[in-house]
Image 1: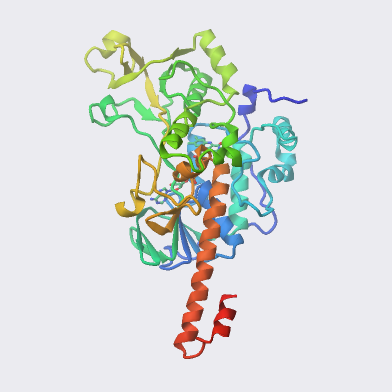
Image 2: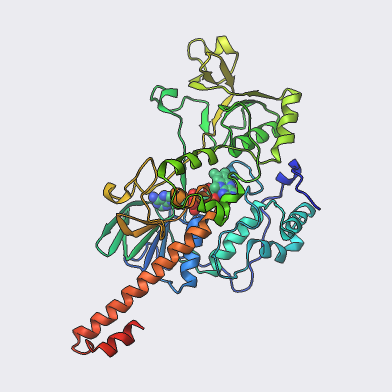
Length: 467
Ligand SMILES: Cc1cc2nc3c(=O)[nH]c(=O)nc-3n(C[C@H](O)[C@H](O)[C@H](O)COP(=O)(O)OP(=O)(O)OC[C@H]3O[C@@H](n4cnc5c(N)ncnc54)[C@H](O)[C@@H]3O)c2cc1C
């Protein structure tokens, strides 16, 4: 039997290859510079979740949609984050792909096979691993080309407008989505907002902005930095460390946990299947919180283990395990440069030690965008940071014409909600709800029209309208 052997070279797929579009899938731009004022559905966020929702609605015959995204292209923020980290492969396997549950579209694995001639030998081996049901590693290059394919195939590109949404206002049987200089009103709005980067706790800087020489994981590391301090325990931290080592930098890694944690996917694989999701069905809020807390712990892909362990043994990487950060300081702060050597920034640990480097990067993870910033507070109904969603439809319970797909659905679908595969499950529920609601609304409208013209109220005709 072939078993999965995690090897660092799997992390090194080429990036930036040209991928030919499949016939009939040329992307088109939106027809107008600003979004139209009405639509059947507005999708806020065009990441993998928004792409899945828009594609599913297309299959269900809902074509009058408007997608609004800060970045203006399908999966733009996801790919920008990945490229800033110089991440060359996805963490999720071939089986997890943005798309539509229940429709036999060309899937990510099919797409890779169609472009066989462009794959490296290593990438071909991973495709074979996926075909034989093993865990596989997906090149970001293939994923990006596939997203472009899905987007063009389902006419999503034509419906994406680049803009920031400021407000989502549910009123009666309509929802109005507003930003600077536009408002779109539709019977349904679907929030696919993803997650925002987690900022440093205010007490690390006494409420001040980050000191000079300290940045976040989704910002570039200055070329001039010869040494790096990385705070965090997840995959972003691992990428920052391996990039630093590859560039010849000395790296310090500060972990709150007693040991780094390596695993294939960032949550236990069972949560991507129905039996994992069932662990959330009918369980108490407290039990779900506990499950989420346990499952959303930071971890690093197995492939990094040999690389990081070797760097530590060689003295290029110093790992500070089980250490708590107490503060961040710029060089020149009293005592820092003198006490801890020449460095442009320092991390002060709770035990008083200071770790200095030319640059400090904080990789503290992400927090769920629950819709609270856009919706009126009565509508979001947030509890412990999670929105109050109907378990069957993923509609906001207090505003049933607003629905959520993505990390926000975590307390209904479990930890997989924040991953590409979870979006497919959420999308199936949300798209079916929206399509059925629109159809019901149309039928009701037709029936009303017939009644108001003086005919209809005849039961046989009504039955025909509702058939
Ligand atoms: C570095 C990194 C690597 C990852 N790798 C994987 C992986 O390999 N596999 C996996 O399954 N998951 C991975 N994840 C998790 C990943 O974030 C999700 O799978 C995926 O991005 C979530 O898709 P999304 O559409 O919910 O969110 P996003 O991709 O974040 O998309 C949300 C979009 O909404 C937009 N938006 C938000 N608010 C507004 C607003 N007010 N107005 C307009 N637009 C707005 C955002 O700008 C963004 O474009 C990774 C995450 C990170 C950070």
